[in-house]
Image (tube, rainbow, N blue to C red; front, side, top):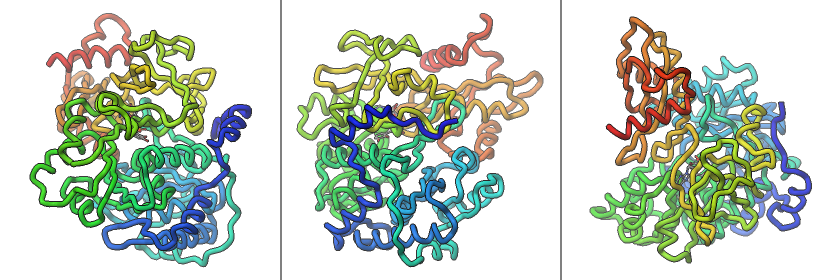
Length: 539
Ligand code: J2J
C-alpha cells in the first residue's frame, strides 16, 4: 500500500518552474519570518503572548526535545490541541524535526483518535491534560494502550511536555520540502475519516496565496475563532497565513460572540474566519454589543454554504467586508476577491486561488464521470479538480483512491456547483454521502456503522435534514431487529458512549419498521439515503 501518491514528475517540474513550489519547508518559513519580524507579536493566547522570536525559540526546543525523546524524522505524531499558543510551537517543532503532525480536532474522542493513531502508526500523541471539561490526556493514554506504535503521550502542563519543550535547541537537517509535511483530516464520506498527506511545497503555496488574496500584512491581526487544526482556520488564510505575513494570531478559546468580540476589541483584530451559523450568531450579537468592532476589516465565511440573506447582512452588521471561501482539506480553495463586485461576493463562493487550479464541472448523474464529461457552461454539475495544491491520493487508501480520483488525477470533490463565466463557483449541493452540520462534516456511513453495532439495530441510514440554524442536521433512520425496541434516546447515548465526536451523534433518530424503498428488492444505500432525504424534506 502506497503512503502517498506523488504528482507526476513532469507536473511537479512545471509547478516548480512556475514558482508555485519553492522548496521551502515550514521550519524555514518560520526562520525567515522571525529574521524579518523577531520582535512583533506572533501569537496571543488567554494568558500569554509570544513574539516571533519567542515562537521560533520554542519550536527549536520542541524539535530538539522530540529527537531526545527518540522520535525520528519521518514518524507521525497525533496532535490534539485546543486553541492555545502551544499549538504553534508544537506543530513548528514537529516540522523542524521532520516529524509529521496528524491533526485531530478537539471534538474528537477515543474512536477517532484511535483510528488516526493506528492508520498513521503514530509514535506519540501531543495533547492537553484537560480542556472544556474533557480529559484529553486520559483518552490519549487509553489510545496509547490500544495502539502498539504509540510510545508516548505528551500533555501540555505535565512533566513529560515540559521536558520536551525545554530541550536545548540543536541544528537539525531541514526535511525534504517535496515530502509529506503533515496529515490533515478529511470530512469523510465513507466509514472512517481518511488522512490527507500535504507537502511543504504544496501547502505553503496555498498559504502564501491565501495571505495575499486576503490582504494580510504585518499589521494585520487574525482571530482564530474556529479550532485551529481545521484546514480553514489553519490556512485560509488562517494562522499559517498570519505567520507567513508576519502578522499576529489571536487564539479564541471559544467561538461565541462574547468571547470573540472581547478579543476583537482588546487586540484590534482585523480579520477572522467563521462558519455560517457562527456568522449569523455574530451578526445577531453585533446589534446589541458594547464592544468596539471597528478594527475588523474582513470576515471570511465558509465551510458550508453562506446563504444570500446572511451574506447581505454581514457587512452592515459587523462593519466589515465579507469574503466567501469554499475550500477543502484535500486542496482546492476558492475565495471571492476583495475587489469583486457585490454580486459575486454575495452570490458565489469565490474562484480558485491558482490560475493553474484545473476545474471541471461534469455530469452529476454519473458518479464515475471523467474530466471530459463536462456539462454545458452555466449548468450544475459535479466538481472535479486538480492542481498545484490538491492531493492525488489519500494516505494509505489505495482502494478508496481508485474511486475518489479520476484516472487522470482529478479529485472528485462530491460538491455540486455552477460555474460563472468569471470562473466563480456557486455551490448548489452535494453528491457525497456526507452531512454538513454548519461546517462540521459527518460521514453518513461512519454513523451508520456505530448505530449498527447496537444489538437491537438491524439496519440504519443517516441523512441530512434541513435546519434553520445549522443548515443541516443529521437524522438517523433505524430498523430494529425483531423483538427489539431501542428508543431514540438510548441510541443517541449508545453512539456517544462509543467515544465519537459529539457532532456525529445523530440529532434525530427515527425508529421505523422498514425502510421506505426496501420493499422493491435490494436497494443501494445511496438510493435509500436519497429516498429518506426526500421523505425528511416532506415532513
Ligand atoms: C459550501 N460548501 C462548502 C462553502 C466548504 C477553507 C474553507 C472551508 C474548508 C472546509 C477548508 C464551503 N460553501 N463556502 O478546508 O481551507 C464544503 C464542501 C467541501 C467541504 C470541505 C478551507 N466551504 N464547503 O470546509 O475539508 O462540501 O474544508 O467539499 O472540512 O466543505 O470540507 P473541509
